[in-house]
Amino acid sequence: MTIGKFLETFDVIVIGAGHAGIEASLASARLGCKTLVLTINLERIGAMSCNPSIGGIGKGHLVKEIDALGGEMALAIDETGIQFRRLNTRKGPAVRATRAQADRFRYQERMKRVLEREPNLYLRQASVSALLVKDKRIIGVRTRTGEEYGAKAVVIATGTFLHGLIHIGLESFPAGRLGDPPSNRLAENLKELGFNIGRFKTGTCPRLDGRTIDYSKCEIQWGDYPVPLFSFKNRGKRPPLPQVPCFVTYTTPETHEIIRKALDRSPLFTGKIKARGVRYCPSIEDKIFRFPDRERHQIFLEPEGLDTVEVYPNGISNSLPLDVQIEMVRSIPGLEKAVILRPGYGIEYDFVYPDQLKHTLETRLIEGLFLAGQINGTTGYEEAGAQGLIAGINAGLKAKEMEPFILDRSQAYIGVLIDDLVTKGTDEPYRMFTSRAEYRLILREDNADLRLTELGRKLGLVDDERWEIFVNRKTKIEELFRLIKELKVTPSFINPFLEREGLTPIRETQRLIDILKRPELEWRKVVDLIEELRKFPEDVLEEVETEVKYSGYIERQEREIERFKKWETMKLPEDLDYYEIPGLSNEIREKLTRIRPQSIGQALRIPGVTPSAISAIQIYLKKRGNRSEGEDSPIG
Image 1 (cartoon, rainbow, N blue to C red):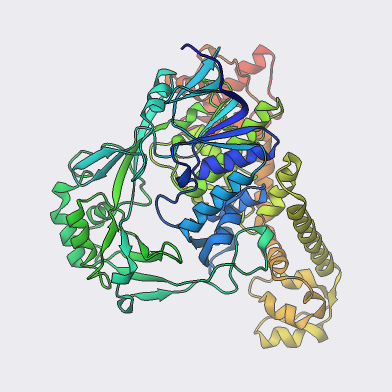
Image 2: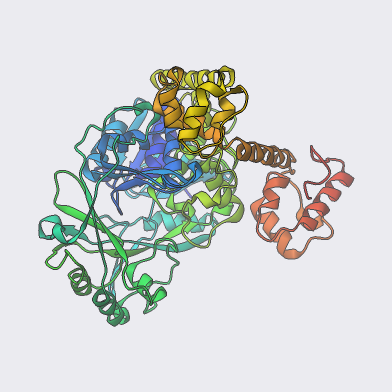
């Protein structure tokens, strides 16, 4: 490939300005790197192509972690959110999560404003057609109109734009999303460079005119109060925007029959869409087919903003013809006269199999090239933002010739997400769930700042205001722990309260912390009883309550993490030839050669790699004279 003179040179170039591109570019620029963002349409920065919401089970954890590290997503949704809720409040603290409806137009405007005002960050509207590579190292990019920009590192965050193909019924047309062109030349270039490319499918719901909805036939759903904002910076504050309700309705047997009769016109069932879709967020036609005995499916009517009539009917994502979509929508209670403003659609797009990446999200094939978001086979704004943050950090560190930044599975959901992608790959769009994290009682939403803010500060991403808030909160948590350990209660003081609550009284003076460990004890009532506890804010009380009540389980997970860390320190040589190791099957050799695990721990997590294979590797390394640190074997 002939490379001409660069129009301009940057430390980092980010391709794409969706949720991954935003976090990547801001992280890089805030590390002090001269950063260029190239996007097909500057007006669509931060666009919410699917549902207008942030957070949810597992996803909310990612948003809190992005915030703790100094990212932008939590601040953006706090400023533009129009309904906030905490989910799973009746379940254990590990699975409690926050979710918010966004004013999607204000969200976009805010993200564009933040990028425009960020020092070291430059925006250009352009479509990238090729990566410029020399000696297997990225040196820049070329746009469709021929301009070339130099860079020490490049982050690709193209979402669904690589060979994007939209389906509405049996009609299809190239697009990155409805209204925007695809990025076909860059997709071809990635294949030419040798990347293993796959194809996935996702979809979205039609948008309805809220003025044509009869809300009296729907269930009203308000948000929570006090409003649970996302950012640790905003604890105790009120949202700046008015809060509005969502509504709930349901499909009917008539809806299902309309869909069944139209399956011969659905690209999903005629074979026109060949790519794999999101198993945990299926289209409505897929739901009807897979769950034929279900009489109804829930639909959330979510407003898209305060200054628009558009409503997102979450739950009826589809790729059916428009006439079928209209008939289907009008068979639903409250939507009998609903007008579709924008049709729902399915979209197929290319992705890069993520087992070709390092844990930094740098590709193993080309040095200095990083991938983030849906290009890595994930789905969701939150998953994209988390990857963008890590890719942007590491691209910036690469440009500055500094050591990379990696989060492991015991530190963050972000670490779980990236390790799953890099180690296991994915054969369907990857979505984060709390069940994916082995140490989820330690990786809670409420303690993301305690886990990660100091790391963000060391990187230079956490500003003085955030840091002061963090230090103050951490100090109060430590003070409360000392207090409940030192404060002693007598039987004469506490027993009348315990008896009123139907709890077993104590016989001798005990430390308050031992009383508070009782799982059936309501902390709020104890706080009301003991004056010294009343000065602590609610979030501090909640944090300490969780740590105390679940201390036994937390200590068990901490022991498991110690064992995990030991396996992770057993490093594997980068040049290890697995085909020379006796006792390994060809399948295991191929997997280990392709993924190139960095440690025995990572090798153990590769599907199909057996304990006996690990033992064979360790025996081989011991004979070769470069025995791993730690015990001879992590098995058993």
